[in-house]
Amino acid sequence: MNMSSRSPDRPLERVVHVPLGERAYDILIGPGLIGRAGGEITSRLRGRKAAIITDEHVAPLYLEALMDSLQTDGIEAVSLTLPAGEKTKSLEHLATVTDMVLSARIERNDAVIALGGGVIGDLAGFAAGIVRRGVRFVQIPTTLLAQVDSSVGGKTGVNTRHGKNLLGVFHQPDLVLADTSALDTLSEREFRAGYAEVAKYGLIDKPDFFVWLEKNWKHVFEGGPERIEAIAVSCQAKADVVVEDERETGRRALLNLGHTFGHALEAATDYDSSRLVHGEGVAIGMVLAHQFSARLNLASPDDAQRVAAHLKAAGLPTSMNDIPGELPPTERLLEAITQDKKVKSGKLTFILTRGIGQSFVADDVPSSEVLGFLEEKRPK
Ligand SMILES: NC(=O)c1ccc[n+]([C@@H]2O[C@H](COP(=O)([O-])OP(=O)(O)OC[C@H]3O[C@@H](n4cnc5c(N)ncnc54)[C@H](O)[C@@H]3O)[C@@H](O)[C@H]2O)c1
Ligand SMILES: [Zn+2]
Image (cartoon, rainbow, N blue to C red; front, side, top):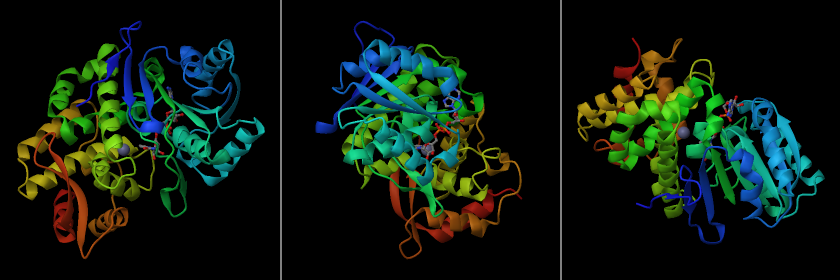
């Protein structure tokens, strides 16, 4: 496994390098990075113009500090503040963003900067990927989910009425600045939701990291060096997978641990964030994936128990019973799953596990098994 390195002048800061040849980039992780963004950008990018895309929750908190820092380092920046929330990941907003970026005369060496969570990152990244067939792109993720997941790897996109993330391009960022102090203003619920993705990296193939999280999760929530450590390990884990399989033809699918069940539950609750947010669906989905693996005699039921106990301790939901309101019938849940996945003659692809940190891609799971399992687990 590659290890993130420490920065010589800033002992708290971590650097994860993503070695993708011409598309290689650094992820810097530490406190106060927004206030130093200008220097970090000018030392890596040639252009001296930037278009910042952000949302209405993040702008009042961090936009001024970012603009000041860019100005200090001689970058001429303009900004666009969009409504917060998943609905902003739309073609309409993509048009607004690309128009603004073109009006700002951003050239290929200049940068689009995403300042916000995954919604802003996916939207601004898509714009950066298509304006002039690709301009520079800097991610400044401000949610835990965006810092450990969406800002790394180059997937960008918007939603359409046909489903989530159906239009998009691969466009790697040129730099990621994960300012860990920005997470202090995040709601507890959003932080927890991002934490589910942190735990996911342990459950995929890092059993020691999962054990470390079982011991240290409280410090990760409180901030300080453990938070930086957890984010660095997560970014490294994602980077390793992305480098091996940039365009998701194989191993990158492991990142979907818990997501098949999770996405089905998100669909079953009509993407109503008052009932379930993505990371909560993933938390329940990871527990279900472990329970399902136990049912198929691949893993011990004790592992499923252990995963549930940890996520529950961190305040996450761990079973369908924890979702407020009624769920649709089991057949509809299965339908949501088969829509999420390619079905080959009644067989489904799932991420299953042989135990903590031993996940694998199984592409021959009979849908009848899934139906039986869901029947057993769904709230009575
Ligand atoms: N590209 C990828 O590889 C990838 C991976 C995972 C998820 N995603 C996408 O990411 C999106 C979800 O991202 P998200 O969970 O960050 O949601 P989000 O961007 O909607 O942010 C969640 C909420 O937190 C607010 N917020 C952001 N930073 C804040 C801060 N520092 N302080 C206070 N409030 C803050 C936002 O305004 C928003 O209301 C989804 O659209 C998902 O599809 C993409
Ligand atoms: Zn996810």
